[in-house]
Image 1: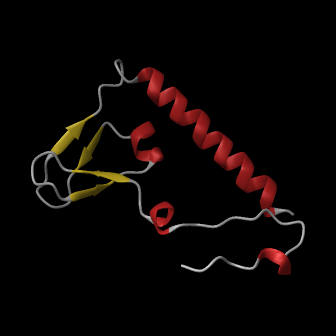
Image 2: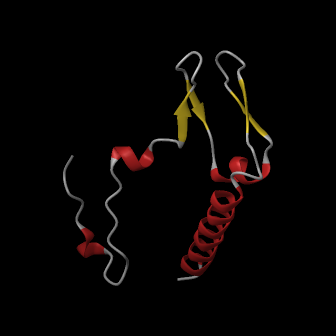
Length: 89
């Protein structure tokens, strides 16, 4: 992969998105090893994640995961604020 030329956009942040960063977030299914796409929003709001390959239902223990879920909410809010700020520049 070649390095992009950022000189054409002076003042803009230089971002080099790698293939790894472009992959959807998720995890392998513990039952069938198929890929389960999972977003931060799903983890924050859904009570379960379902494998699209075998139908395994993974429940989220909200009480035990409360610290992690609160951290994800903060990350999501920071991303929203960042996107909103950069949308108008």
